[in-house]
Amino acid sequence: MDDNVDKAVECLRHGRFVLVYDFDDRERETDMVVASEFVRPETIRTMRKDAGGLICTTASHEISEKLQLPFLVDVLACNYGSYPMLRKLAPNDIPYDTKSAFSITINHRRTFTGITDRDRAMTTSEFAKLAKYALSNGFEEAREEFGRNFRSPGHVHLLNASKQLLVARKGHTELCTALITMSGLTASATICEMMGDDGNALSKQKAKEYAKRYDLCFLEGSEIIEAWTESRKAR
Amino acid sequence: MDDNVDKAVECLRHGRFVLVYDFDDRERETDMVVASEFVRPETIRTMRKDAGGLICTTASHEISEKLQLPFLVDVLACNYGSYPMLRKLAPNDIPYDTKSAFSITINHRRTFTGITDRDRAMTTSEFAKLAKYALSNGFEEAREEFGRNFRSPGHVHLLNASKQLLVARKGHTELCTALITMSGLTASATICEMMGDDGNALSKQKAKEYAKRYDLCFLEGSEIIEAWTESRKAR
Image 1 (tube, chains in turn green, cyan):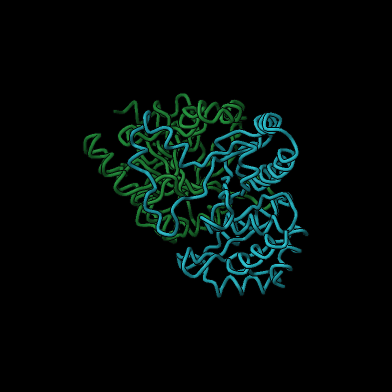
Image 2 (spheres, helix red, strand yellow):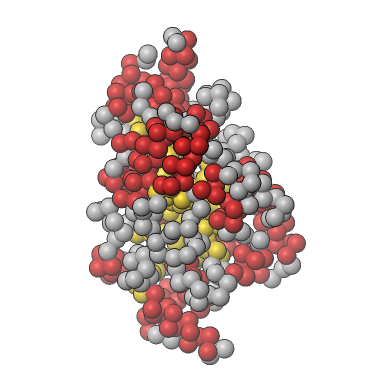
């Protein structure tokens, strides 16, 4: 495995942030990434202050299948009969991909407003626990446990990784799912897009400077794809 | 009208932020509030850095009716047949209210990723323009225009104000809708919950200090309700 990816995987295992840039010909965006199981209130605080995008939690295809997590675009499409407006809003013109990874939004049932650092940390870290439980139990148990502990809508966006990881879609959801799968942790990352102060995404240069300042790993999508391809061959 | 509310309305008309605290016996939360029509990239930057919650855009009942904006909880309920999991996730235990104001998420079709300050500013300010257009045109024209210019899912949460404003529900969505209606501007506010660095919502005391530091109006829900009730009597 690429040295850089190796280091990043080690960082994730220690609950540290890793920065993941996608590609110069895609979103040109860097996300702050952490293993969901290690999210604490301070993690959320750093993400909202230093990254500034939406705080989202990814689910591998195995997790989203176990928990019956739909893609939000499919949920909306189910409503075309009741709300014809939704058909007119169909996201048929996303500039950087064919489909967004958005699933539903959730809150843990023990949260209060759902949005504070404590609340979002509870939602994301408990989601990782649930995902772990789900992966080693049957569909029915997994879904009962999900419904007992979470409600939707909520304040944390779930993101579904595509089934054939990094084949059809190569977004941050897939890149981070590959990375966290290689780490051997529960395959859910909590991620947030890094914003620049000029109105645009934080530039790759500035994201690298941030990584340097805080001694964090900075990875490009191509490095993850290469390591992932290698790791699949090795199986 | 209460002097404080009067000043806040004047600030909104000048595109300035107003801070709105709800009630000691509800969320105990302060939101940064601005008229959607005045949102610029710097507005979004300030909200994500200084407030830190979800950046949401409200729609009065008149607007959401014109644009057929569903409540997200109803959209999910429509899917109980296709995705039985969603029924188990039903939000039947929100601690501070009976129903959340969440509608769908949107992006303007001219955005790129949808999440940058520029992109969210375009989505929110263009939504205000659309709302204004919708209010003075028929259902069909309004909805065509909506679909031509926006897609869903996106990165800005729409919030639907309840029909009888401040009767059944007294959340930030309703408080801000009342305030912006009294200002005579297009009845859409862009709002964001203010977070504290201790993991909780920013305390009322700290929110007041922030207001003082930046010379912003700070309003409590009770003041808005009083002014709103007065203004309705005066009609």
